Image 1 (cartoon, one colour):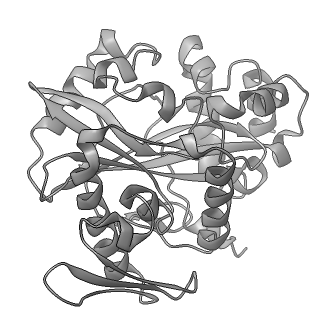
Image 2 (tube, one colour):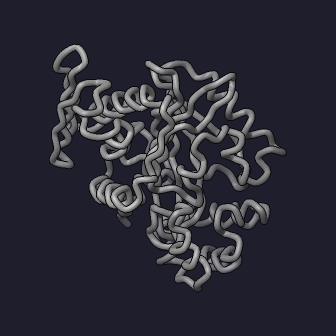
Length: 317
């Protein structure tokens, strides 16, 4: 049987029959083979959903401009992130080009979105909008910038439209430790302090990645706190597991920006309905094994608490 492309490209997150939180980072890009296909050969992934996801992000930002937040001292880091992301995109997709036209002049062309923009680095008027917001209009990832102060990291800027049960507006200015306060067992296991130490040790230009996984009802990228009134109600209703319940996977890239030294945190979200996940027998069996063993508080945090018995029955059937 031929598998759909999004199954073949899906970043399957599980290894083994037991899951616990950890730093679990690896150098990126690095291609991964899965039981269905492969993923991870590039940092940015311009797949078939690119145009529709960028249109959805633009609509969210039009409705709620507060999904873009930035403290005043982060503007240099935002320009650093913009140039880095446009360069990465041009190296990844032949439909995109970044041309240096002078000392600080650039021309960006994106044939997939039918747009061209000439701008002067550091000149917001020439770009027509804040650099971080423009960057987020060209790449499929949410973007968060972490500033380093006195040996600690702080979330001081970001454009996040596809959050899972959190809000970039709410966490603006929080420390790395405060950001992860709701995550169960992390402090006892020491994962968060280890992760911050690892990030502080990144060298300019270095890139690593990790994965996180949870669940979503429906094909809903925007599961932020701002839209809880919509997706929270969906959680309370009985659902068709195969059609409505989705495995939600975030591929998170961590980059030390070369000019400012800020940490850029990229979050690319993938959704796969259970009916398509079940096409890959080893995935179906492994997910059932992991969920059956997962501690209750972790299952609740990932959105599988109440639906876990029915999901296990469905997966095993």
